[in-house]
Image 1: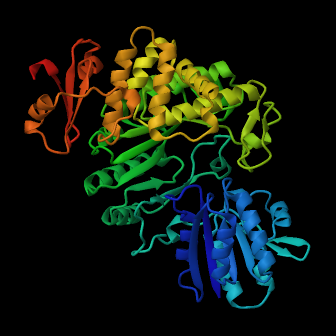
Image 2: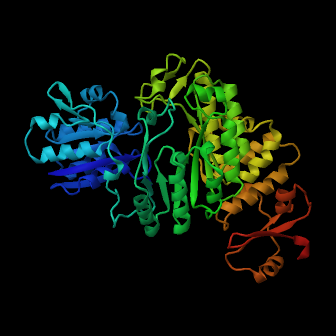
Length: 555
């Protein structure tokens, strides 16, 4: 018997943890199990062709909000081509309303919730090669039998330590994000999150976790993302793992979702010793309005979150990604704008401006009418409007979201944005004005190049800046050279060419890789001290990443 487990990821560098767990948990059984991974950008016809070529008896799909529509269409095509192939679905998008979903889908089975034990029992029965009653009695399994859907009943949560490490020794994880799970469940009850439907948190044995994390370090995996919902909910566990990873060395970066307000003084002391880029933190702020936090069953105060984020930030060794959610119950546009400005003032490395999704199985979906919420009936079930915020305002925030992602999160425009912010009362006003400019110029409707982002910012600045255009142009050119190849500079950045003798003299002590560029000001002094020296300066961009400025008059 041949089984193909399919993960259709949102991006090519992602990897699917669920199908790896299923394979590792059943690898001792007498059947061939193959993993196939694609992305939502792959052509449907190509995915069908690749799966058909496998000549599988059973095909299993890992199903999420980002791929469920594609999975449905692919499985329909596979059934048309070969009606004998059996199709099983699993994942959060089919674990609620499973009976109704299986009626609408062309597949044969749905595995509800945690899938490892259910999948194993399913394969054992299938290997017996008969349609016996035991198959219909498997807990956690929905079976389509004619026009009837038969449910085997609720399966108890499994012992985490029964899981089998999901990665193979020879697996190639180069250029991939590897996902890792050291716990399941969440100690919080946020009403928009599916984790709130399962009470309690279960942990892997900590010595086992250390051993498995060493696998990633030894293989030189660039980024490992913990999928634990709140990694630091157990202080002893978090401290020991963080300390171990710091001692472990290596170049692997580990990403954690944490609740910043839970961080203790002792934990922050440990984190302060981490090498730069060893850890990344994702902090779900969601809103800085404490009343709205109560509406979503988050019993924390923003002030506590901010205090801890600021403490971590001062060590400059951990990248922090702060999340906001638009469309939360009871939050209007003004409140969300305040949340945005509050979070922006912290100056985290990244800000995610997301939008509420009324996920199947979440309490928020049940309470939608109470809050006047209307969401799309199609995945990912994103909010359209609420009593407090209109669809028109959601569209405004959508445009701002794109500007924040393209300019703030890129990390390549920090100097230019800081200069432009002087002309606006708040950060939100700046990003809204920039998004309005984008829309007026038609940029939202077409793809633009990396260089174009600088040109757009320059054109936008000409509408905003009064009398300091040349300063901004010099800053923008400097920022371009910091993050792009230096052999070619676009014309709009106003390159100043040196006399050949002067350039030769400047290059006496430089390597071929070092770059020199002429400016009308001492850009570095202006950035550090806001002081303008109105004479030409040469900035040397050394191959090692350092930059220094010298008055051109010296040459």
